[in-house]
Image (cartoon, rainbow, N blue to C red; front, side):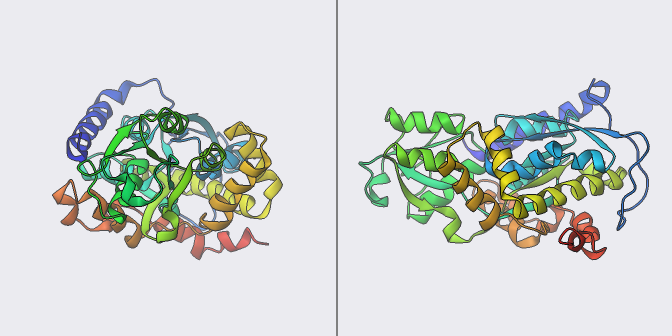
Length: 350
């Protein structure tokens, strides 16, 4: 299965659902007029929104903290938070109007928009690929991967992208020299390696820590490559950003406040990780905090040309049109810019 058919199918599903979803029972976003301002005043009646995260990984923490710490409510937003097993399901729900905001890989959003979907990146909280490629003990060196299989979650996701980047980094061609096998969740990827269904897999924290304990070893830390890439951030519908910019700004105000709390309050961060990752393991929690908060989480999460171009370069191997478009077509930086230039972000440090 190649990415081009997936993108076309994904866009068709999303666009069709958008048309059919006009009468959906999902709460509608309240109409709020005006352009992004330095200080957004919450309305007397909270605006109801639906938001979702697309993996159980520490990289999703800004959404978790914004919800659990009451930061959305402080901005006059009544946000219902849910989860999707992967970005593919999440982006379909976004385009269908079933959710309003996603914590999701920029690659999934850009791929959907490239296919004509109503999707837009409004913040990039992680600007490089930070997964790791782990392998069974018999895969001693990268050359041993030839003719073997790498486990991922789903095709078209950031995990799929990480696998392709890693395989090419070692001089192989994905799907020809090294097979890519869909396994589902991160837990399933680990299980597939244990059973030798696949010999390597792409994992994120906390699964990296747990997999190493089981005897699997790291072949490549993709974060060490420093590739500009819109790995994770906030996406919404382009139509929502155009019609209700104040809602977008208020949502991002809450997420930016959550990022500040994560970076300055480790006890809070570990508590949130403990709840959502469902572990009390101190090593797992510390590793997750070190990698996802201190090392890679952006304090000022501007979406930018470089990180989106990294996504387009990867998509171009399967979708030639990705070479013909500008990265600026897929993101809107005005909301983060407004909060930055107004002094809001600096005020969080005071």
